[in-house]
Length: 451
Image 1 (cartoon, rainbow, N blue to C red):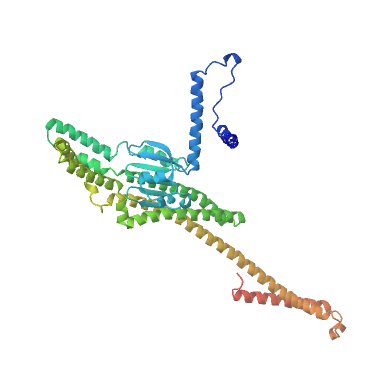
Image 2 (image 1 turned 90 degrees about the horizontal axis):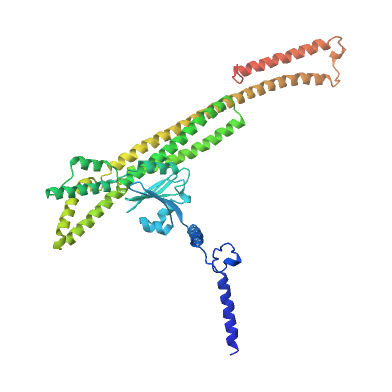
């Protein structure tokens, strides 16, 4: 009995802090004493609910951000877009790619260029464009970056309002109308089938827009580099100074980085062009349509045993004939002509951009050679001046040696001759000057000095 109150008090003391940790409810403004018994109005309750919902949504967003969620923009075939925040596991489940492919879209590989083909998706990492493309939608990472906004705008403008599958649905609707009117099986006209086949698949439309955006971005950077490079190089050629040399050093480093970026994108496209199997794996719509046809064939085989569904199976088989016209150019897995033409066009554009950068680098190299020639010329002039001064110093040293010998008071008969001092000085000086010109002429004869 003595332990029961003690244990009860401990349990109560443990439960009291839990009541204090409950989330605080939004308090209404203080009411006057006469309104203490009056309940709150519906407007106040609605405001309180809005505040609570805003707080809960903010907490949810904070949890998502702390949990590794990233911002994505989702585009479908019709061009509709929405902003979503998905975690890594949600992206893996949604598009069906391995987790290692998401590392390519991370900050570690921010300056790399990759176009990877998977079973149901295509991972694109080109400069600032980091996206996952499927046969039905596009997931774009970090769409609010300053470099990505032009690409998003191009997607909204250039993505068609209708895709191949929507056009195919229209063909099936027209087929049903023709079947209802004539009672026979309707097939699309050759013009309609040609129009359906002339449009690129959704993944290639996205890839084309991405390559166009990247090539335009790189071309603009190269144009800016050219506009700033030639005046700086011309100024260096006119005046070799520390300031101009620093400008050229910065220019050359920027050119090297830009050339590496262009080379990476170009090498990735060249790698795809050299491997037809990789290009065939990029046909996501082809694989998707073949899977759809396989499932419909299995469904037709199962419904053929049910007599009530025989009419529906016949209509589906008739629609499969119209689909065969649309997907006839998808049946050959080795047919990569469309993608090859697309990649080849942008490969040539990137090759032209690379040639522009190489021309600027050649101009920089020519300017450096010219500056080095100028510096070598100045250095040679300094060496010639030094040689001339050395010859003059040698001649003067001889004259000084003669004067020093006579300044030692050595017994000599010349001291007894009157008036011989100045003639002797002039004769020795003239001999030294003559020696100087003889040595100088010899140096020029040996081409040690310039003319």
